[in-house]
Structure formats: structure tokens, C-alpha cells
Length: 323
Ligand code: SF4
Ligand code: MG
Image (cartoon, rainbow, N blue to C red; front, side, top):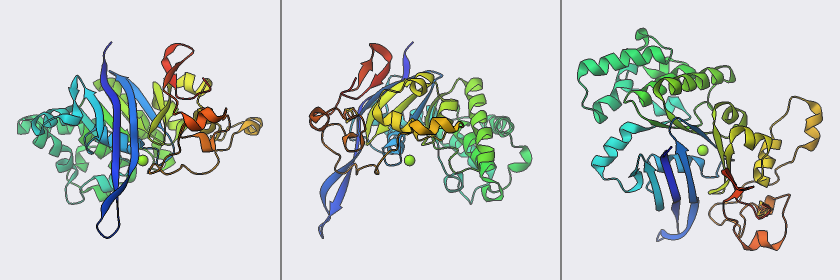
């Protein structure tokens, strides 16, 4: 079937200002030519080290950032060029959940006001319809009517994230971009929030882009996984295939850095050396070459590898000269 989201050659570059005149002296190439699709009802996990462009990609897809070039089609409409009016319709269908609920919830509003606000600004629903939806949602996210008149700071992090999820879902979106939604929470409540997101997905037939640096979380929730490195796609594959048969040397290094339960498996851990180079001045050729343990020669330094099918498979692509 047709993908609900199509991202084509998307770029987001931020100018770097310098000198007393604050002229543009360079660009941070946070997202640098990224293409992928997401099917209706699917969860695409997005992983990579911090600074690889994951959050910027999510924010640009939700049009919280203006794209530098390329397109993001949602249900056939280009989000990056939508007018103000079209954008309102798109916002009803594309919502975001952020990492830190404490800072994404307005402390001066009650829970009821927070959850109702998107319905007021994005729909023409009557007051009674908004209230019905509010009461339905507060229970669906595991809170109760007694919470509605209170302020978000009176709640735990997990409860705050439930409020943020209710707010995002209030307008019945089709597509939700969740940027590290469990990373700021206690480990004990992370699984509850993940399971809540899964339950709500089943109930509302939601499509998710799930951004996380935590591979075990991504494995748990995703149908497919996309790995990014320095603003580019390194590899995309169905979840089990990515974990069982990773191809890109960066994916392999990331996976081997997850501590395993069995001690023996620790022996073949590959250590990712060095930190992510700056996206301001990315290495020539393959951007991973300064850290790559499978470097195959000069071609890695000269030519940026294309994203290509692995073993002729359409569902597994990788950007590496080795394959
Ligand atoms: Fe490593 Fe070369 Fe593949 Fe880049 S293209 S990941 S440097 S083997
Ligand atoms: Mg981030």
C-alpha cells in the first residue's frame, strides 16, 4: 500500500554566524539529503548518537523547522511548502511528543486546559465534543478526571508524559513523531509509557516515527529501524533483520555497544572510537570513515556511498562501499 509519509532528499542546514558583522561563515548540515517512507500504521524507529540529526529531522518533518530543501509529503501534501491554512490541517494530523514533559507542558495551565488547547486551536469542535474527548482521553492515558483541574508540576514525570500524550492525541492525529519520549523518565516507568504508546497505536491506527538513542527501546517498539549518522541515512531495515544481520559498520558498532546479558558475548564487542565529528565540517567521502573499523580503502575517503539495497532487497538499504 501507499506510504502515508514520504521524505525525499530532505536537507536542513543551519547557518553559522561569525565575526563582528555576524555574517554567515558556514553551515551545520544537520540533515543532509535524507529519503525514506513510512507506511500507515507502522512504527519507524530512528536511532543514532546525539548530534546525528535525529531531532532536527523530526522537527523539520513536523514543520517546527523550515526545510532547506527537499520534501516531506504527508498523505500526498508537502508539509515543507504548506501555507498557513494548509498547515493547520496538517497539524491536526501530525503531532509531536517531546523528551521532557516538564518543559513541554505550560506550567500556568491546568491539565484540562493543556489537553483541550489543540482542539480549540486546530478544530471547530463544539465545547461538548471537546469535553467528551477530554474525558475519554484522560482515562485512555491512565489518568482520571480528578487530575484535570491540577497543574502539571504536581505530577511525576511519567504522569506528565501521559498528559503530553493525551494533548498530542486530542485532535485525532494520524501520524505522531515521538522524540525520545521515555528518555527523561525513571527506568521503572519507561515500559509503561512504551506500552501505552503501543496500545494507543492499535486503538487509533497511528503511524509513529519513534526517535531514540536507546536501541533496546527502539527494538521493542519499531517495525523497521532507520540508522542515521551525521545527517545521513546509514541503514534502514525491518527491526529483527537490523538486529540479526546489520550491514553498515556504524550499525554494527552501535549494536555491539549494547551490553549483553551473557558475559561471553562481551568479547566480540566493537568499541565505537572517538566522538561524532562536527556536522559543520563533515569528513569527505563516507562520513563514518574516520571511525570505521571495516574501512576498505581510499574509496571510503573519496566517495560518499549511496543508499542502496542490500542483497537486492527493497526492505533493507545501506550506505557503504563494502556492500
Ligand atoms: Fe566504512 Fe567505507 Fe563503509 Fe564508510 S564506506 S562505512 S568507511 S567501509
Ligand atoms: Mg536529539
